[in-house]
Amino acid sequence: MLRILDSGLFTTIQDAGRWGYQAYGVPVSGAMDLPALSVANQLVRNSRDEAALEIHSPVALRTNAPHLIALTGADARFEINGRALPMGMSVFARAGATIEIAPKRAGGWIYLAIHGGIDVPRVLGSKSTFLRGKFGGLEGRALAAGDHIHIGAPTLDDLVAAAGRSVGVSSMRFSATDGDESPTTNIRVILGPHADWFTPEAIAALTRAEFIVAETADRMGYRLIAPSPLRRGVRGEVELISCGVPFGAIQVPPDGQPIVLMADHQTTGGYPIIAMVVSEDIARVAQSVPGDRLMFRAVTLEGKTIIRE
Amino acid sequence: MIHPQPRLLPAGDAAILIEFADEINDAINDHVHALAHALRAQNRSEIRDLVPAYSSLLVCYDPQRAPFVTMRAIIQDTISAPATNSPRAPRLVEIPTRYGGECGPDLAFIARHNDIAEDDVIRLHASVIYRVYFVGFTPGFAYLGSVPEQIAAPRMETPRTRVPAGSVGIAGRQTGVYPMESPGGWRIIGRTELSLFDPSWDPPTLLRSADRVRFVAR
Image (cartoon, rainbow over all chains, first blue to last red; front, side, top):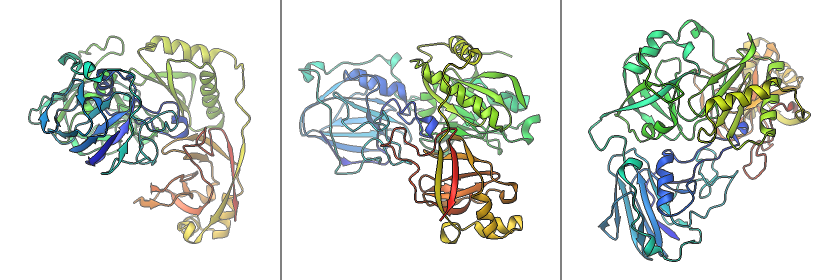
């Protein structure tokens, strides 16, 4: 069991998502950075889709039993009883240990996986917290100081022996940016499904301009600031008929400033989607923070090679 | 316009948007739900989710299990195959509604906007058997259509920050019920005490795609 000493803001329980209920208006939710969740789980010998704590601001916890834990995601300060530890490695924490985690840059997403998994009931097939719907995770809410988090029974006999497992840098991405000051991240996109709603200038601008991540970036979506609005073409006078929208969709409202849909996005939307972020790059968008710059590169669906004009 | 053949548009590398038309039409909406039903009945592990809307179906798939070309073939085969099992018969769900007063703060606006009496707004709203085109936006929110032209109304210019659960609203010729308290820009004419969504139910919503709905004034 873990006891929350300091919950931070928006610390929630997330797994790989609540699939299969979007036809009832239920968002998929799940981890913002799915590869980081998967790596954290593999480090502590859980199934890849197991729930972990998704951390967004400084937290402190205390163990009530020995646990095998691992921290992945955005670059963070990670200490047990005041001793600094590396991310991306399985670590043994004895009973009564104090774990402190703090992101190095505000806005990233960090995953704390615990061997045995987080023992909360599945709601509609998932342990993920959906805050707006007030269900999933721990009573449908963000964690608070004093909460007790139950951990599933261990399947390993010797947790100490299982510690020290690490992942190479290639399969591990602590941050989209490696800590530089507002750097630019290249993100691959596949144009469409509504690219034909936009002017050729808007399509060209999408793949040439730099977009800045706005302050309004949360689990629902990241607003981007375009240097000039992405304009609609001949079909711009009619309204799109609402349709299903996926994680990573780049929607463009009438003001021409795009929004990238994230894990808690609404199931359907009425704004045209100019392009989709490729699955492997969604985590890099998720790990961008307000003020960061993104550049989009159009790639083909097959092979994801860059399209040259 | 109704497309002669449904358009299969890649929506990134993990979803396909199937567009049947770019208009709202009951027959097209039936096609959308029939295709969703047929794909669901195949119970395929490569399909993660199906999201029907007015005139389109989004198929979310696992690209590790099937690439786009495979998924496109599966969808095309399903579209051209004759339906083997028909979707369930639509249910008729009645929604007892308290119109006007503090439950329906925009009833007077809709009456004024359309130059009819408030009682006529209620009578007209409760006179139609509506179709659930789809459920979306928020858990359990059913897009119902269509209200009579005489009670159609534009969305609010500034949405309310807080619309109580159970509120019955109108936007254009659409009507719907807010399942949980949320911000919202629809014109609110009444409220029901029915629960629209409960995550402990399976399926979790009172109203489901293709159901029929009637409001009953209380």
